[in-house]
Image (tube, rainbow, N blue to C red; front, side):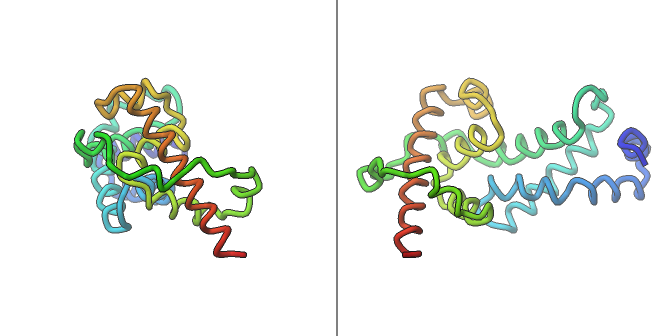
Length: 178
């Protein structure tokens, strides 16, 4: 069945079509939720909340652009609403413990995607969200600032700090592997 048929069936509240839509997109969207959640159960809750919003708003999808992109946007917005603005205030991390280490491009190459996602999940909440939105989802600092209700400079600063922390974690992994 086509995507358009699937969406129309869901709008008519046909359970078969709803189950099929969930089956097609839940796996991809759970991966998105995992990037924003602190643990797997929270990610699953986010996924459920997001799909409720997807089903409630399907009649607003205008068949312009990617349906998967539209669903992803709802998933991301649902995840972001779970975090309060205070999460993005400057977090006292003590970045002196995370100097600018020299990091060769090959350092990233050996990391499996799952390993990298685990490292990203260890970042403080505000850093993790900004990193995910910019580096993974491709949003600009202006868009991130608007979504999170923060200054663009805060977004930039938290991205820099997130990258420094990730670099330090990758170097630590390399030391362990040697």
